[in-house]
Structure formats: structure tokens, C-alpha cells
Length: 247
Image (tube, rainbow, N blue to C red):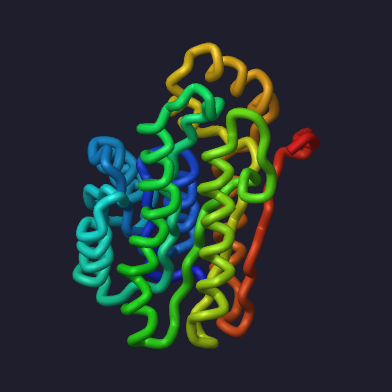
């Protein structure tokens, strides 16, 4: 994809799952990727693999709940590559629970990572995009941004917020800055590991994640949005397993 080659793309939550898949795929298409996550040992392994395959990559420790961390991450991309073309806001948590389980700390974690993390990414990268009057946000959401059911109430609320933020941002930025939302269905990842209730985790895997697609499917959707000409803004892509029908 010619419009991907040479672009500097920063990816949050890049240490596993969808974020890792996006980083690997974009690097294979010639993008210069900047990986951020808390688990730097994973980032180092992924980066070495990308380099061995001929890709350009750097990585940094990143906690998206800390605004200064995200500002430093964007500055790190600028220092290494001189610019930033795309920010992929991917970091997320999914500790599902019933409201009356009162897992208030987990609600706060989801709000801090899933919503504030995206806002911190926007606040860090938008000044760079505004200065050069170009750039693109790719916000990774979930089909939970348009569906809610028992146990997903707070999680879905955070993803509804990401969808609203993405569309509002699209309308507020200049005509040369693009905003894409990619909403994955059930995808192979570590997200179920964030569910603290063992029985609920088992149920989620057996019910919600009975049929899954690989992270590469989501990476290809993100790459499609990035690869479009500058005057084409792909605003939403929903990607589900073909067998996923109920949500």
C-alpha cells in the first residue's frame, strides 16, 4: 500500500493482541512504527521480530492513563522520525461484570484506559497534526460501542464514549486531518484476561468469544483507512467474525 509506506505511525497498547498485529502489519507495508505499552519486555521482543523482517520500529514504555506519558510518547516518535502521521489509540481493558457486583475500581480502570487514554492520545498528537495541518487518528473501539448487554454495561459505555469522541473530533478538526474508528467484534486477544471473576471469564470466552478472528483482520482494516488518499476519510469500519450474529 503506497500511502502507508514511509508514514510514521504510533500505536498504543502494542504489546499484544490487536495493537501488536497492527504494528506488525503496518511495518510489513513499509510504515515506520512506534510502539508503546507498559510491558516493555513484550515490546522489545516484537520490535526485534519486526526488525528481523526488515521493518523500521522503535518502542517506549507507555501508560496511557498518564497524560505526560502520552505527551512523551509522541515526542519520542518525533525525536526518532521527525514527524508523526498517524496515532492509533488502541490500549484498552475489558473487565466485564454485573453492575451489582460493585467492582468500582474496575469501572475506574476502564474509564481511565478506554476513555481518558484516547483523550490523552488526542491531546498529545493533535497539536502536531494541527501544526502541519495533516495527520490521522485511528481509534480502536469495539462492537460494544453500538451494543450493550448484561456484564458489558460499563465496558460498552466506555466504547460508546470512544465512538462519540471520534465523531466529534472528526467534525472539530481541520479539513485535512482524518479520524477513523475501527470497531472489532470478537478478536483473538488477551482482553478476557482482564475479567476478574473466573466464572464470568469462562462464560465470556464460551459465549461472546466462541467465534473469533485474528488481530490481523483488524490490522488490515486499520491499514485500509490509513492507505486512503488524503482527501478520503474512512470514518467507521466494523469488523466481526462471519459467525458472530447476536451482538
